[in-house]
Image 1 (tube, helix red, strand yellow):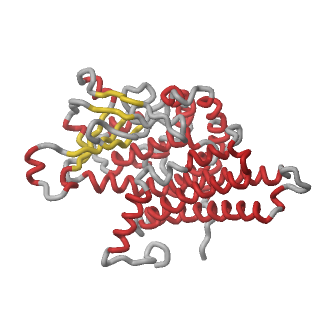
Image 2 (cartoon, rainbow, N blue to C red):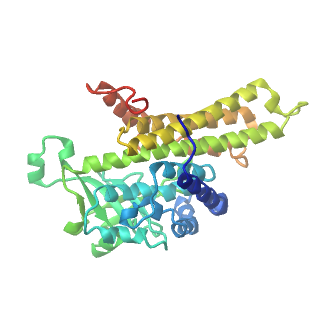
Image 3 (cartoon, one colour):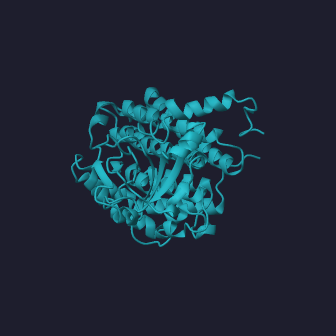
Length: 395
């Protein structure tokens, strides 16, 4: 029998996440909203008390497996937690869960001797952030949390880069043969010369307006041999695994935004007659918009849960890709439907509706864009000779 009832552990996670969101995330917009949008750096720093509360409450420790000293539950539990938080405030939530993506390569390539890199995230105090960043010509773009709260570097940066050693390049037969992952900490940066790490720009974004995704640059930075997490040729599988997990979590983000959009649109439809004799929820066109939002959100939630279960039970990452694509696109459509339901009043920024759209529209284009990366990954699966169309869901 198919049963989508949460286990006692998963239900407890939902209760705890909902309580955290109510106590801390609900007030986040008041913290960063009073700071000009032209200062995303200061908006980000205003979230530090909320992030510290997440650390003290075990949310960061919950991203680390129990065998390494953490308190991680199932991936389904993480999806439940992400949805509960994203339904209240996506901006503060992304800062919190961005650390989970930052830690993912370290946890996937774990070996003895890496304990000092993980220790800050197990203390339960302070505001340690982790970031997964990609080195590009001229710097690193759009790396969430990559500068840390003091803008001197994340407490842990897993830097995906290309080996330029002449011998390695001569031996490489594929581009992935040169991909490596380095671990960088503020202590490493401090040991280097001035200018080895710079924050070049804090971009102002349409949504998630207090998230730190700066343009940073490493120049002549040297780290100890022990900071080599993945040697050239071994980095791609580790990073790919991290983004398979995050695909399911983006599905949960989309679910949370869709849920918030439905709640706000339903409240408006029940409470406003728009000059008529009955609340507009009684009109078929309004009800149809609500129905579409609700169905997308329910579908997104169950697809996300199934994707998380498939990933952790050896059934592959196809459903995670589908969750990322479907749920992120669905969140955008639901935000637009909510705006259409309310009408021009939705354009008033004192209402939440344009905020839903601004936050949702990044989901299809970040964490591996749907068009250029996630759909192409699905295409490769479909093209493979041993592809089993329903292996992840029916077999």
